[in-house]
Amino acid sequence: YYFGYEPGKMMALSSDRVFQDPLHVLPERQRRLKVARGEKPYLYTISSDRKVSIVRKRWKLEKWEEVRDEILQFQLRDEKLLEGNHGTEEL
Image 1 (tube, rainbow, N blue to C red):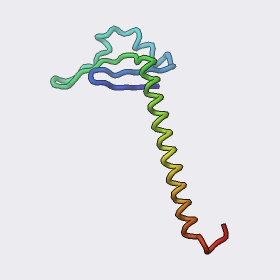
Image 2: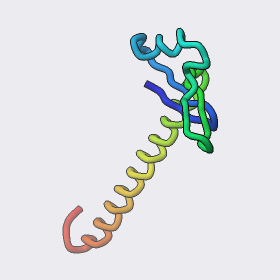
Image 3: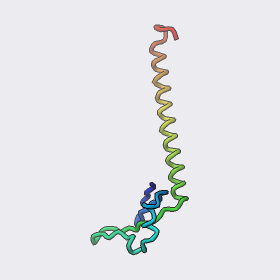
Image 4: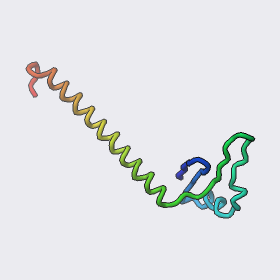
């Protein structure tokens, strides 16, 4: 499942047809969220495959950056441990 929000638009995409099909068959007026006066309404819509692809690429990049940072932290920790034990233990 993918959900994205832009002002005035809630987008969803899924391979689950039971979830997605109702959005395809409902007329636009029934996909509009009814809100109280003064609140901003928005429309439920199917997201484009392109939008999902962009989000996936960004997520993978962010995950890679998290993993990279974690690896660097472990390397720094290991270097500090080795420096602290230098001369007291055989390496």
